[in-house]
Length: 549
Image 1 (tube, rainbow, N blue to C red):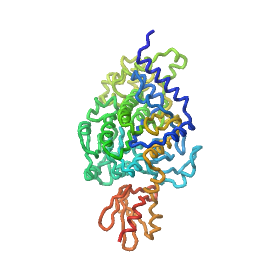
Image 2 (image 1 turned 90 degrees about the horizontal axis):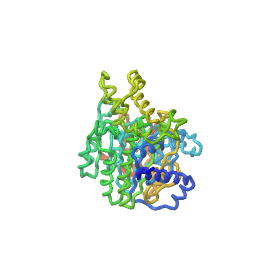
Image 3 (image 1 turned 180 degrees about the vertical axis):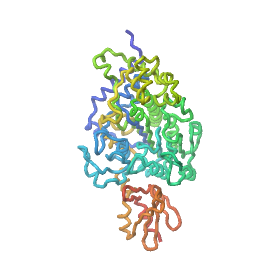
Image 4 (image 1 turned 120 degrees about the horizontal axis):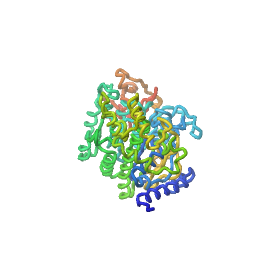
């Protein structure tokens, strides 16, 4: 029997992965970090949301050769939150961005509840206090910054690297903070949260953040062509009202949208012009979405899309030789397995083709295929064929015709054909792979909070110190200046922190980096954050207030 080069490549890649897995360990990871204290001029972190290990295995077999990710596999990451063995995306992102474990739905702030063994209970002593993220620290170092997402840019994971709110659903606050953070490159979905309107995520405060961005010198781009052609150093890409299309559906449904790899390439080429270096966050968001839907086709397509973006980062880093690249998933999702009830006793004799060939018949995700369904469902079998259910059996036809949830039925039928199993429609708690390259790269089995500290150390700052500079509790700080603090909620959507001492008055609009005093605006180094009933301001705001005549 002749073994092809592609198959040999896959076997070699798998052997390499398991060899590395045998070397994993918390102790080894910390030792490696201690041996590699090098700083990096640039840091790129790429996160594929909700990606379990079997998802990458399937994507590799589907591709027919090793993933780009395989070449930089260096360890594993523990993903639990402060309150659960299975994390939500908000605390997972908070951990990787700020270095602090947190609770479900909390973005960029400290937890209220700590009950997970091994997590420092002292974290809950200052519940809901904002914690600085690595993007804010990079800005303090004079570096250019960027965030990219195939979901809404206000979604939980990009929000963790750019905002501070008590609930991940607060898109209006997240969007406003992102705009006033002064991030150089922002690319993804989420245009609805920038403008007023009647849609779910539209702004209710009457503000038009697109106008704010234009006034601050951003080039607003809304399609692939304009993104690739812009020469601006400040770009805000708003490519969809909400999330972008699945990669496998894009050319059929949203051909004007850029790919994740194209956005990554553009961001790197633009940010790398900064002589002080850059920090870039990239999220392949929709592996997670497909996993929630138990859609193996969507999962595979998004993993491969993410892998192409990693190639862009790695190509730059290999040439630059002064760039740290970290790629990781924030948590598992769906419990996807190669093998299901069909294979319990027959798995030793089932070839790779039995898993992959049925999946390759699909030309769209289940969501994409159903977007082609006519109201009267007269083209139901044609739609099923788009998702790989060609020549359905009598039983499969009955299931389709009688279905009350066609998307669920489609993914169940295809998964059954491909011998794919799912245990849940939610997140899972297993460790995920760590991929890294460049100076000071993390290795071994590490906690997700270590990722934040590794990046911060690489860029030359301490996250705790940055937090102390950017987020001072306002009432206590101004009390020391013998000033009083009150909240002006005349406009309930736009509260303003008002500080008064005699004839001295300063106003701080919440979610903005602005201080208004003596009839003029002063830009602050960070945004003003309201978290529960407390307000947090940059340390410099107190000093500026004390200088008011």
